[in-house]
Amino acid sequence: MVRSAPLSQQTATQTEILEAADELRGRRVVVLTGAGMSTDSGIPDYRGEGAPKRNPMTFDQFRESLDYRRRYWAGSHVGWKMFDAALPNEGHRILADLEGAGIVSGVITQNVDGLHTKAGSRHLVDLHGSMDRVLCLNCGQAFARASIAERISADNPWVDEPDAITLAPDGDADVSDYASFVVPACSVCEGMLKPDVVFFGEFIPAEKFREATALVAGAEALLIAGSSLMVNSGIRLLEQARRRKLPIVIINRGVTKGDSRASVKLNAGATETLAALRPHLLSDAS
Image 1 (spheres, rainbow, N blue to C red):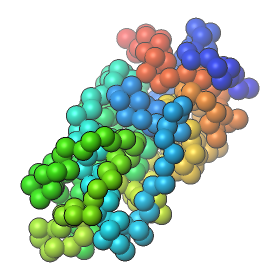
Image 2: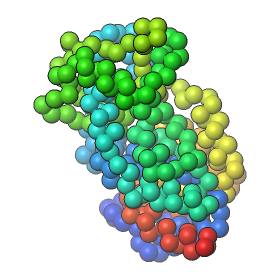
Image 3: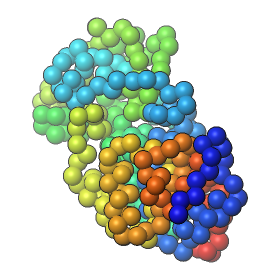
Image 4: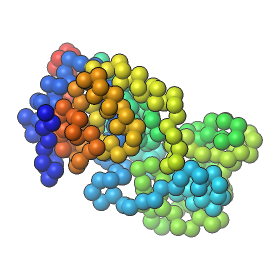
């Protein structure tokens, strides 16, 4: 039976925390995280309260139009600098600590901000890629994002001083004047560069989803934190856990597409709820 807090409630009750802990303790837990995991690090949510309405660029638009690539790279460069400066919050650190204690067997994230890596998570599957990598679509050469950012700043010094920007969870930002933007090209073959992230209209790489599936297959419980599960990949992983009759705990402010399949749903923020769960889970590991 799903036990769900009222939508207006901002934090989980002690009873709900204990119910969630009972579902997770003594089990190998795989964690799936979404944009709500990073809001306490200053990165906005896609669908949370106050989130700006967006029409994300598709892969076909990026690939077929220089003007779209100019717009994307101008905004992505500004967004990347903010992502790069962002620090993991307590929730990211708690998951890394729980992994170190042998409670969390791995983290699957829909985020591209790299904050789980910064926090120290080792068994990590970044389903949608990571903004700190850039790939050439022609020859496959990989680049560190920092090196591409240096080239962009040298060729477009004006873009480092935007008047005002709105950051999105995928690392993009609104930059209005991009007509003269110099798009970076591959230094090996002069091919088209693209951040190593999944655009709208692209599929998650098959090997990434296999890695995520393997983590779920080896787990004894699934914890979902900060995801509304609107993206199909998250629901597919949840369904794999449900078919194996694993306990499923969902932490998210507001309704998710997986609420009816959860053992326990906590209508609360990821950081404070993980902080409340942490001592209950660590007590069995000590």
